[in-house]
Image: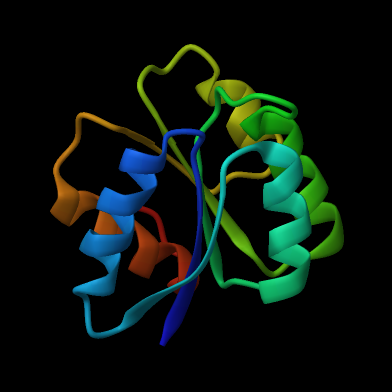
Amino acid sequence: MTTVLLVDDHHMIRAGLAALIGAADDLEVVGEASDGELAVARALTVRPDVVLMDLSMPVLDGVEATRRILAELPATRVIILSADTQRADDALAAGAVGYLLKEGDPRDLLAALRSAVRGTSQ
C-alpha cells in the first residue's frame, strides 16, 4: 500500500483528491495539510511514501516545503500538483520527482503516484 500526504490550501481540492486516491486499492491517504509548514510537520509524523504538494500556499510555499521534507525524509517522493508551470524548475530543483497540472487527467495523477514509489517517471 502506497501512503500519500495531500497538501493544498483549498479544502475542496484536498477532499476531491482524497476521494480519488481513496478509491484506488493500492493507495491510501494518511494525512492532509493546508500550508507548507503544516505539510512539513505532518510529513514527519505520518512518514508518507509520497507527498502530493501544491506550490502556491500561505505560510510556506511548496518549493520550500519540499526542500524541508526531503531534508528529513529523503526516501519520500514529492509530486507537485499546480495550476501552472511557472515554478516547475524550482520545484524539481528542490527535489520533487514530478510536476502535474491540476487540469490534467485523474488517471495520470494516479499513475504518477504509483510511478514515484517505483522510482520511475511518467
